Length: 195
Image (cartoon, rainbow, N blue to C red; front, side):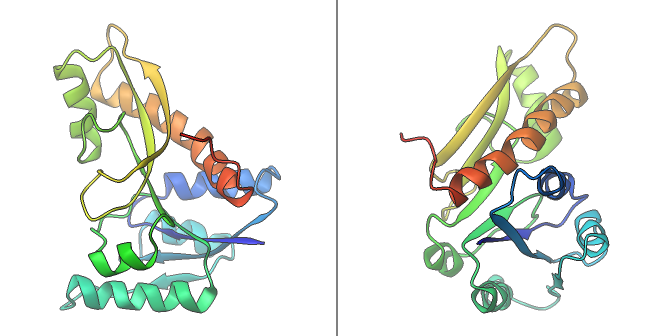
């Protein structure tokens, strides 16, 4: 069984997509070993608890990034996790963790990287401000930069007349819900598209 750990801090939209894919039988060879969060009452943590998935809430108060990451790594190593999946994880991962799990930590970003790195709604507004003809989502490996790691997978949608940042967010989240679980399954089956 291929084990993943999901790291999340927000509503749990991406986490729910994994639960839904599991329920549909699309991740039968994937075990969601745990959810790790720095926000114990976030939506993702509540969804995990409701689904019977272990939640590790790690307190970030008065901890350096390295100290916090060390606690995360203890959980990951203890569970022998194959892949670390970030879904709305509002922390920068430090260099030690990046090195230890090289090419085993993936993140999803709501634009077609390298265009428009950064945070959520501002990304969609940048797409509109730059008159981009398309936008989409990128799944990429984590490296020591922010949204700079090697791209694993991308899917696009057209930017249409009348689109707002909120409408683009909805379109892109639709792609994320569909494709993030599929890409995790590709990892589990060693079927990632070749570059």
